[in-house]
Every structure is written in structure tokens, then in C-alpha cells.
Amino acid sequence: MEGSSLPVSEAATDPETDLIARCRAGEASAFRELYQLHRSAVYGVVARMISNEADREEVVQDVFLQIFKSLDNFRGSAKLSTWAHRVAVNVTLQHIRRKGRRIKLHLREVVPEATVAPNGSSVEVDSPEGEAIRHERQRAVERALETLSPKKRIALVLADFEGKSSKEIAAIVGAPALTVRTRLFYARREFYAQLAKEPAFSDVDLEGGAK
Amino acid sequence: VSRCIREREIFALLDGSIKPRAKQRVERHLETCAECANRVQTLSRLKAAAVDALPPLEPNWARINPAIEHAIAEATRRPERRLAWAPLGLSAAAAVLVAIALIVTNPPADPDLAPIEQPEVSSIARAELVYEPLELLEIRISESSSASQGPLIGEPIRAGDTLTTSSAVAVRVAFGPRASLDVYPNSRLTLHSGTVVSPSIELVAGTSLIDIPAGALEHELTVLAGDSVFTILDGTVELTVTDDGSIIAVLDGAVAVADDADRPTVLAAGVWRSPDRSGGAGKAWLRLARNELGTADGVVAGEDLTEREWERPTGTLPKRVVRETFARAKPNLKVCYETALKRFPELEVSVTARVSVGTRGQVSKVRLRGGERWPDLERCISSVLNQLSFPPPNGGPVDLIFPLRLSPER
Image: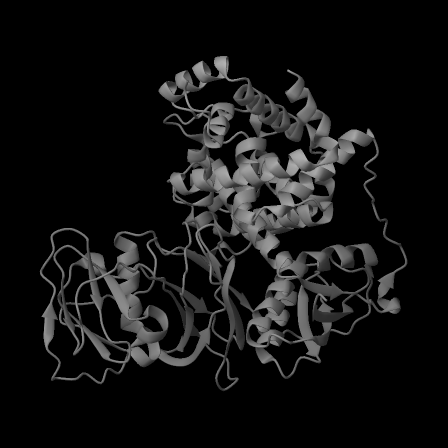
């Protein structure tokens, strides 16, 4: 359904260039198209870095806000998808950094009763029910990811969860491929060592050992 | 007996990045070493199980889409206000040159300075120099081609023009002790300075201009990071606001000290205010400098904050809409607070914001109480709230009150 079903050709006609030109011309439908094409990929990156659903949504919104605002600067040296990934990574890291600095902004809005229509808001709560083991494993993976520094985490997420090569990751995070490979190595070492210690993954270890 | 496999090789084997020769060796070793084979197996299973453990993503687009629609509406509205950095090349060079021309209008040129002449170039080149930060730097253009006319404003640099910049204003703050200029074909720059040391490390600076409309009393300016790999180690963003060419305010940008994977989104924000409250057109220059390789990208966005006509609040807005709209401002409000925390690490403050929403849903006025001692913070919060956009309220304008409690997490 999403962008993945439409292979974007890099041929001379280059629909990407056309799309960007239309965005720059202020065509709202072009912005929507761009969003539709890249939203799943952006969400994927953000979601693997941030576990809180509300935070994820906020960050995804921020990513597109940023993409729309800086589209004029996109010079086409990278593919649009790489650039979108890069913005996603940067906004996500920024978010994590802010959270990591343990800064919390308490916002209570008190809207004067007289000026507010009485239709109440509904709060949607995700209820992650299901197989206990998978849930445990999910928690364990998230915990292990959280122990990594943001840079290592993003490298690991892009490599092992998104299947990107170190070269692609380098283009996304804007670091030399060698640096990325080093980060990735340490990230994997820490991550899988941590995972192996988790009770939820103990049987995985045993299966491996039994072979 | 071959040596056991290194961890690095196992990872490379599992993600397929291992080189063919190493792969052959590893595979041969695995046939004979049960311990290594076991390590590879375990890691491989662990990796598969980890990927498997994360549930398929089910984004709730319905919750995300409204904000995107809002962003699209913003992005397609008044596109002329979204000025991009000129790409590095002809126009960027022109922008840099022209910036210096504009910022420095009454040069106190020192005739004693020994000129250091830049040889004439036949293609775009970069002149680089290192000088003492507190010294005067004078740049004289003895020849220039038509290409050096700035595309952003209609003030060409002509042959014979002398541009001087004093470190106290532009150079020290914006450039640090190094500067570079792009030199056009058939142009000649003569650089005068008592303390130019040598051509040195590259630094690329960008400049962008935003016009402040006639009659404006206040104008908010925001600098956003652009497309490039944005590396600031110790940079400063300087927002130089000029009115008829003279500097009336230098707004220090809030610049994150970032490393290679981090890039600040909003680099700087400030509000231009009409000096005598008479209103009137002005020009705001933005100069961005870095001390690392890279191109200068950024966007300057401006929003007219000129006071609108006072509207009496009579309408209503659904609470859900208010909450959702306000939620969009949260990230930027956090940035405001974090910026203030850099200066006042212990800052904890309650600010009450009264946001007046006009009949079309636009924010017509923001008034703040409680943050008077931190004008930069107030200014930042105010500019964030001013950018909110609500659906048209029922029955006329609305006043909304948001108490903001800004405190570090304990």
C-alpha cells in the first residue's frame, strides 16, 4: 500500500525531481504524495528508536514538518528517501537527546469553560495484549536498545531491523562508512550480549547450543 | 588449526558484508570448530529472534495526518517567505559577498594595513584567511564580473567597491578567527588586514536575507537547519537584523553544540522589532558560520507578528481541538525551555499564556505572564504560540489560557 509498492525509478524522467519541483511550486497534492511515499519508512525509523506511541507520532509529525520546511534545500545529491531517513534520524536523535537530558515540560491546559464547547475528548489507549513470551521479548529488545547510546542505537536499528548496509547508513547519518561500521560493531556486541542475558531469550541461546 | 572467528567476522557473516576471501576462511573454520559454529548459531538465532520480537508496526495515521495536513497548509501558504540558502556555487558566493557589503556600511578603513592580494581567478575559487578576531578585516574588490551581483538583493558589488567588516560586529561573532569567501571568475579580491596569517582551514558561511514588510512592527525570524550534513562544533549563528542597512540588533542564535549525527533543527530564533514602533520596511540578514567542512544550508522563515486588531472573545473551540493543536507546539516549547536552561540551569518557571484566536482560526495575539525576567524565553514561547493555527471557532474569536509549568525533571 505504501511507497514500497511503487518502485521509484531513477531513470532520466525522474519522478522524484518532478515531485520536488511540484512541492517547491507550492502544490499541496505533491506534499501529500511525498508524505504518502515516505511516511512508512519514516515511521519505521522513528518507531524502532522510540517506544512511546504518543512520542512516536509527535516525532513523525516533526519529521515531515522539517522535510516540508527544508525541501528548498534538498539539492538532490542523495535520493529523497535517504534524505527523508536522514531527517527522521536527526529529529529522532534530537528527541532522544532532549528526553535524555531529563527535561520535562509539564503542560496542563486550562481552557476557560465559557469558551470551550462541551464535547469531551476521547483518549485512545493502545492495549498490547497477546502472547506473553513475545511481549516479554519485545520488552527485552526495547530495554537492550535503550542501553545503547543514540548513535549506536540508530546504527543497529538501521542495519539489523531495517536491513540497511553500512554505506546506506553512512549516507543517512552523515558519517563516514568506517565510523558507521565501528559504531555498528560495538552496538551489536553490547546489544546481543545484553539480549543473551535476558530470561526471555534464554531458550534461543539453548536452541543454538543444542545444535 | 585455523584461528577462531572474531566477533566482527561473525557479524559480517550474518549481515552478508563479509569479503569473499574471509568468508571462505570462516566457513572452512566453522566445519572444524564446534565452539565457533555454536557462537555463530546463537548469534544468528538471537538476531532473528530480536527482529521477530518487535511487533509489526501499526501506525495510527488518522492521528498523525491532521498535523501533516496542517504542515502542508503552512508549507504551501506564502511560499515567498521561505527563503533557502543559495546552493554552494555562484549564488552562494554572491550571497556571502553581498552579505558583507550590506552589514558593513560605514567602514572606518585603515590605510596602514598591508594589502594581501588574491590572484585573479578563472573559475570559482575560495579565498581563505586566518586573522586575529579583534582586528579589522577589509576586503576590496578591484574587479568583478556581473556574476557577483547578489541574486538575493538588488545591490551588486561593483569593481572598486570596498567592503570592510569589523570583527566586533560580524567577524568575531559570526566567523571566529577564520573566514572564507567564494571568488568569482574575473574577480579580484584584495584583502587588507594587519593580521592575516595565512590561507587556512576552510570555512563556509552562508547568508540569507528576509524582507520585512512595510508597516511591520514585529517580525519573527527562525533559522532552520538545511539539507547538508550539519556539523557545528563550536559555531555560532548570528542573526543580524538591519534596518536600512544599519545594524539595530544582533540576536545570538541558540546553537546546539552538535556532533556528526546530531543536527539542530531550529538553529536560531529572534524577533525583529521596529526600532521606534513606527513600523516600516527593513531587512534582516542571517549569517551562519561553522568551523567544520560542509555547506551552509538553512532556511530563514519569517512571520509577521504585527499586532492585529483586537477582537472580543465570544466564540468556542472544542477542547479536543485545542488540546491537539496545542500538542503540536510542545516540541518547540521544549526547545525554548532548553535554550533558556543553557543560560539559567536552575530555571523553573510558570508562565501563563493567553492566546487570542481570531475568527479564521489564526492566532491574533499572545500575551504572557510570569516570564518577564527571561525575555528571551518569553519571546520564544510567544513566537511558538503565535504559529498555532486552529480551525475557525464557532461564534467568533476565542481566548485560550495555557498555564505552562517549565521545570527540569526530578
